[in-house]
Amino acid sequence: MRYRTLGDTGMKVSVVGIGTNQFGGKVSQKQVDEILAAALDAGVNFIDTANIYQGGASEEAIGNALAGRRSEVIIATKAGMKMGDGPNQTGASRKHIFDAVEESLRRLQTDYIDLYQIHQWDPDTPARETMRALADLVRQGKVRYIGVSNFSAWQLCLAESICREEGFSCIASVQPHYNLLHRQPEEQLLPCCEHLGVGVLPYFPLAGGFLTGKYRRGEDPPEGSRGQRSGYVQQFFTDGYFDAAENLEQYAEDRGYNLAQLAIAWLAAQPQVSSVIAGVTSLGHLQSNIRAAEWDMTQEEDEQIRAQVDKLPARLPPRS
Image (cartoon, rainbow, N blue to C red; front, side, top):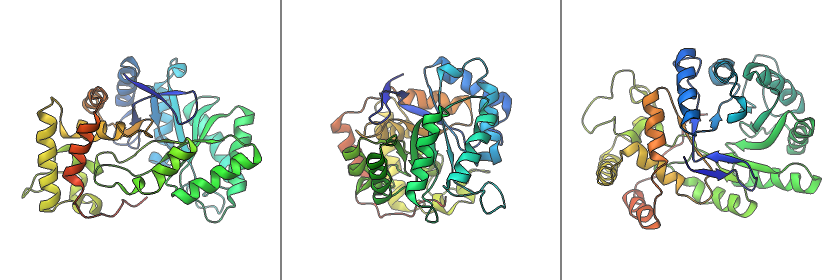
C-alpha cells in the first residue's frame, strides 16, 4: 500500500480509503468486521464515516470492529447534517459541533478523532464560530486534525484565512465530489488547495457506479442497482458517456486493470489528492480498490485518459 501525507500535515494516509456510508445498514456488523480486518491487514489505514451515515450506525459498526486495533487506523468522521428535529441538531454552530463530537466519540468507542470534518457549509453560522469550535476541540485533545466537506473554493479560503488570522489549527483536507466525469473542482477548488496546502479527499470516485462497467448500453440497469432509481447515475446513460466508458474499460484491461480501478487510480494520480474515498460493501470491493492503489499512473496515461472525457458535457452533481 502506498501512503501520502494529508495535505500539509505529517499524518500518513493510505492512497485509497474506505467509504462507509452503508456500514451498519446494507453492510452488517459481521461484514464490517471482515472488511476492516482485511483492510488493516493490507495496509489500508484511512476510514471515512459521518455521524449521519445510517443514523449513527456506521460509526457504531466501525467502533465495534476496531476493538483492539484503534492505533492502526486513521478515523475521519463528519458533523453538520441534520441529526434530529431540534433547531440545534444541525449545522456548524459551536453548540451542535460540541454535542455531535461527544456522540461520535461514544459511537466510535474512542477518546479522539483523527480527522473531524464539517460536512457542509452552514450559511446560518459565522465561519469564525465554527473554526473556533474546531480549534477548541483540537486543544482539548478530542480531535487531531480538522477538515471540511462540500466547500467551494471561496468557502475554503474564508475558513482557512480565519484559522491563520486567529492562530487556529489549519484545515488539513477538503472532501469534494470529484471523478473523471465531474471535474469541476479542477477549475477553482484544486488550485486553491494547492496554494493553501490542503489535501483533497475525493468522494463519488466511481460516479455512482457508472465507472464500474456494470451499466451497459441498451441494457436495463442491474436489479437493485443505483442506476434503477438514481437520476445522478441515469444522466450518464447517453451514447457519448457509454463510448467513453467502453474506451476507458478497454484501456484499463490492456494494462491489467478494470474500469473501476482506472477511475480510482486516475484520481490518485492528481497531485493534490491525499486519499480516494471509495465506498466498500464487500471484500471484493476492498480487494479491487487495493489493486487500484498499485497503479502508479504516469502523466502520459493521465493525459490519454483525460482525452476520452474532455469533450463530454457537464453533468449535475448528486444531491447531498
